[in-house]
Amino acid sequence: MHVNLVGISEDVKSHRIYMDGLAALLSGFVTFDTFSSSMESGQVLPSKNNNPIWHLTSQFLAPRIQDIAQGKIVMTGHDLFPLTVARAFIEDRYSDPLRLHLSDLRTVDEVIAVSDYSRRELLDFGVDDQKISVVPPYVDEKTFRPRTDTNPLFEKYPQLSRQKKYVLTVASIWERKNLLRMIMAFSHLARKKPDVDYILVTDPIGPGGHEVKFAVRHFGLEDRIHVIPNVTNENLARLYSISSCLFFVTLAEGFGIPIIESMLSGCPVMGSRNSGSQETAGNAALLVNPNNVEEIAGNLEALLENQTLRESLRSMGYARAKLFSADVVRKKLLQVYQRTDSA
View 1 (spheres, rainbow, N blue to C red):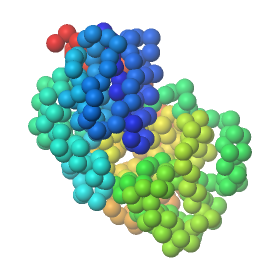
View 2 (tube, rainbow, N blue to C red):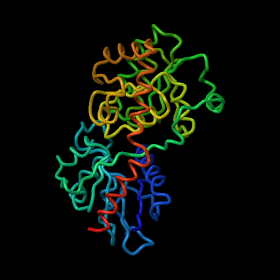
View 3 (tube, rainbow, N blue to C red):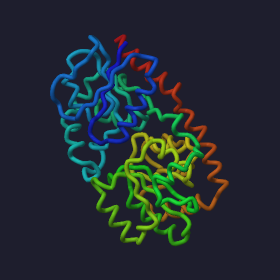
View 4 (cartoon, rainbow, N blue to C red):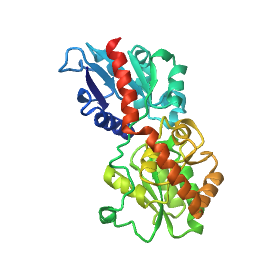
């Protein structure tokens, strides 16, 4: 059995993280090659193997299904938000290709959903239930762990201080990530707790970037909110380790990879009572209504003031993250490949 992993070349960070996780899981267990492809249909995808399993690792690669000349196809569906949430939440360059090639997605041999929430979305759009397996993403346990080697972090980002406490958000700039409401909630907290700052790991260039910058200025938080783009995994793990909590109150997630990264790193999680986030976090996070700024702000303040609660969430989070270990995820992934190969 030989697998061709095809990653998306467009800047969808969570899908690149997913691809890296797959490569780490498969190394030493099956032979595989990796490819990077754009969403656009084009020339036939080459293969060094005569009858490979093609694993298209993003639903946005649906247009490339028709470019595979031989072999069987597995496709991962992280979510169908381009088709299920307001169009303003997603750029047309992502929604239009998926909308046009949804029928192609239904023709693949196997579909991996990253959560049961994503599985239900796929079912709603006509994907055969018999083809769908729930296989969560893998987060590298060797990188994401409680870190004490934080000197490189403070050297790289001198705007951060060891004397400060931090809440941390790791998210893209898209509207469904709910950054505006989280900034509004932090503005309430900032007035009461001058020793707490907000670290926002995101790329400020993109849909919603102007609104985020305006909100930071509007609330006078230029010195309290630190926007940090292009963070390495090593430094991201360090950011989790210095933060009082992951502040991840998004409107919609297929899975929510930062939740598991945070839990493995010993950082308590505050998340959303909705979509894949709730499924991933289970009872090991403080979950709130992402549409209610007052509820978000009140619970964030309560979490920061309650060390017992943070320690409880830290302990439960670490146990929860072990449900997504390499052995667990690899076993599920190989079962999908074996079923595809023998069909």
